[in-house]
Length: 496
Ligand code: BES
Ligand code: MN
Ligand code: ZN
Image 1 (cartoon, rainbow, N blue to C red):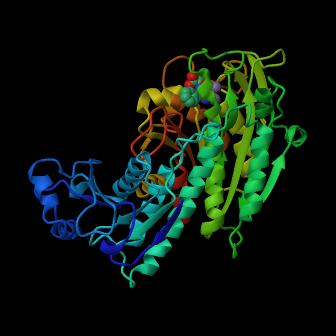
Image 2 (image 1 turned 60 degrees about the horizontal axis):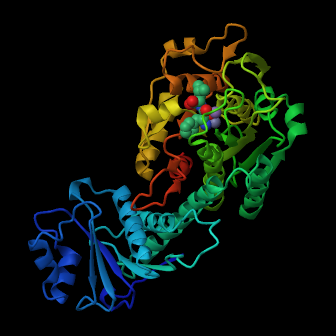
Image 3 (image 1 turned 90 degrees about the horizontal axis):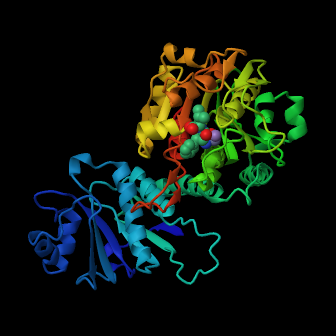
């Protein structure tokens, strides 16, 4: 899909559809919408009076052959109450309009930004909304005859004077949305098409194309580094583990400057191991590599956006399988850090591979850490599919992330990390155990386990188990992988 700026008057655009939005006000027909209403002989006001056009959030009103416009259709999207309107609303409007139109076989539309909102940020979120809305998880469908997709979007409402800021916003939006779709593509792959080895090849190809430094650690290197926690998960199946290391270095890096470390869980399939999961819904565990995919997507975007801070990304990857060689409940493993771990439940494998990922990224020089992982079912119980669970060891660092989440329009909620919870994972026969001792708080004990390896480094853990996958399509996003947390993390790094 192409999205470009078009400064010609919107009424003269020969497009399949002109899209704009209106507010849930006593009179939703104002400003540019009132202008359109006038050239359409009062049609919109009539619809508003009759109660058909209200401006309610994501209400769709489609008018064919609107008088006074060269466009074949006019689509008006409800924007909800004006005082609640923000970037996230505009992103959803652009996405929902895209999906509404493509379902009706429209290939091309113009999006008219409202008066007073013609900014760089508006262009960015419209590009993000439209491009992420166009993504479908249909790669493996051979019958593409019902294939519907938007080819071209024109961004309208910008004057020649406003062109430069619009173009800037569009190009940033394109980079971020393409990176998000790149991550979603990886998450969408089934486990037979995406083993740790294949994921590493894709990461390497992405990094080379983007101009990022990349190193892939194979099973031999992983053993040399004594990553015992990662190896304990990998030993259950025939596919060897991989650790991807992707690095972005800014042009004038000052010695001693902080280095951001991003760690992503990439379990390409999680059966649970010997503590096996129930059959029902197990197919979804192909998305247990979403944290890793997000981090790779973040690096892809950073390569183009060029922040002023060095960023290292470490993605440990393995399958979690059952087999004669699989680790057993009660096994004691030694992590790369030297800490011993009692594996009470082989299904709590994400924290094991993150433990070694964190030890390694600290060794590489990362000072400020963020991990993302589909870590626990408990976070789904706590926050459902609405909020990402945020856990942090350092409030200023965590506050920066929460501010970025707000700016990027991703819902995230900070969870408690009281010392009391740490007691739950004290080991009986080793330093720590990989599950809590049966007192609830499963998402928090999971976070505490990871924190033990972060030590004193400011660290944030994002539990995306509930938010990385849409079970149902949203008006602005297809069913399947969401690419959640990518925009927040790009914002965090860019504003560091
Ligand atoms: N990958 C799962 C977590 C998960 C659950 C992701 C639901 C997406 C949706 C993780 O490895 C896991 O199995 N966690 C266990 C931990 C438990 C054994 C302490 C869980 O949440 O049940
Ligand atoms: Mn598991
Ligand atoms: Zn898992």
